Image 1 (cartoon, rainbow, N blue to C red):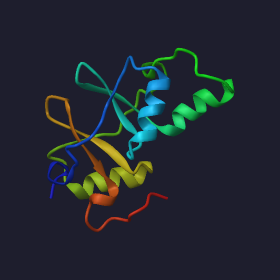
Image 2: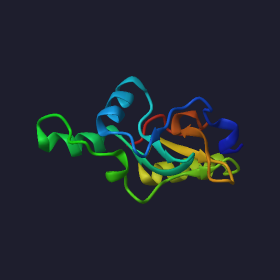
Image 3: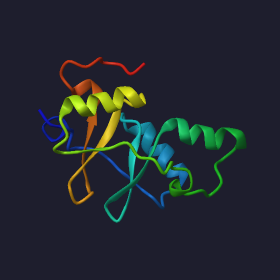
Image 4: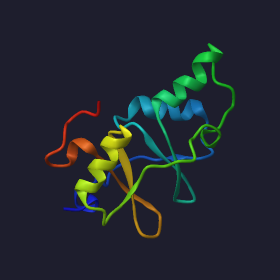
Length: 126
């Protein structure tokens, strides 16, 4: 079974030039965390509630006009549609992430894969 067979095709992305305020609102209304960050349809990073909180909490007020691209980490965990589900599960467990983007060979985000959706895996990342 591959990541492409198990992935969710209905997902949301954040544009790299989106403000932290926009992203925070989107994360509140969207159940998945992290969200893929894209520029021109290509994956450039991931953003999570934790990253937003870490950036905004020290300010103790509204976030400065910071763009998501300013806070995303350069290292991105992802897999391809053809990646075996067991390999994807191992990557997610090893990196302690519950969800990762699935890319086409053209590097476009085509879905997201949640650890809980892979048969035989633990439901929760510890």
